[in-house]
Image (cartoon, rainbow, N blue to C red; front, top):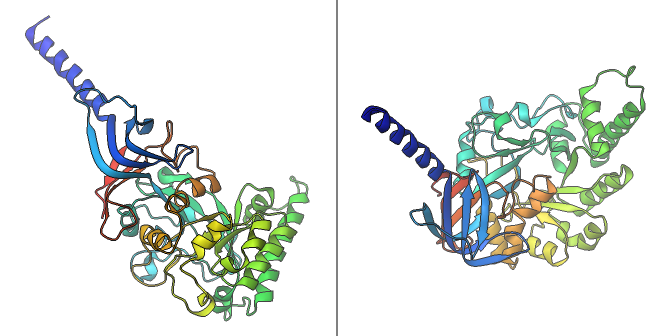
Length: 401
C-alpha cells in the first residue's frame, strides 16, 4: 500500500471517529429536573447519543477526551399546550394570519397542519426561551374551530416537525363565537353556540352509523367522528364558570374526556372539575383581567394543583404584537404565587406529554427519550436567570435568550 493510500485511510478513519464523537456528548449539571419518578438529581450527568438520552444519573462515566458541557440546571424541553405560533405571524398582517377562518363558524374539517409555516419567526422566539414542542391550535373563536397539531420547534417542513399531525378538535364557547360571528350568520347567544356544537356531534354520530359503502364523503363528519371514537381529543375553550359547566354537560352527553382551554374561573369549581376527570389548559398566568377574564387569579395554578386537578401550561392566543407570551415567564409567575416548583416543571413537560400522547418521545429526561433539553444559568424561574442553551434531539438549536 502506498503512502498516499495509507494517508487517505487514516483521514477516513479520523473523519469517522470525529463524526461518532459529535454524536455523543455529556451534560454535567448542578441540578437536573428529570420529570420522572427519580425527581431531582443533584450533581448529575446526562449522556446524549444519536439524538437521544442514553444515560442520566450521578454514576454516568465520562470518558477521557469526551465532549462535556457544564451548566447550572437542566430541564426537559418545555411544551406549550396551546399556541397559535407558526400559523399567526409576528405582525398583524392579513397575509400571515392563518389561525382563524372567518367565513365558516363550523370548521371541523380545517387542519392546522395545512396552515403551519416552519419559518415563522415566532417559532424561534419561543425556542430561545426553552419551548421545544408546541401544540398549535386554531384561534379560539368558532364554535367548531378545526383540528390542532403538535410540532417540534425546529425543522424545515410541517410534516418533518410534526409529532402529531392531528391532535385535537377545537370547540369554543363564551364571548368569542358571539363576537366573531354575530354578523356572519353565526351564534349571538351562548345557548346557540352550545346548540351548534351539539348538533355537529349528533350529525357525526349518525354519519358513523351509516353503511360505509353508501355514506357520502364528508370531511367535517369524518373529523368529528374521530372525536367521538377517541382518536382525536376534544378541547373546549371556556373562561367563565357557567361556560365550563356547559362544557362538562356536553362532554358527559357524548362520553368525551373534557379538556378545558383557559378555564379562567376553573379554580372556583375545583371539586366539579376533579369529579368530571377534566384537564385544564391553564390560561396564561398574566392574562388581562377584563371581560370574561375579570376573575382571573395569579394563584389559579396553585389552587388547581392543591385540588389535584390536572393542568398544563400554555401561552394562549394573543391578538396583539408580538402575538405570543413567553411560556417560561408565565410559569415563573405561577411559582411566585405559590405553585410548587416541581409541579410547575411537570405541568410544562411530562404532564402535557402524557396528555397529548407523545410521552414515549418527549417530556422527561430518561434513557430512550429524545434529547430535548433546556440549560439554564441560575433558577429557571428567577428574573435574573436565563436560558443558555436549547437542544432538540441532541442538536443545539438555540443559545437561549
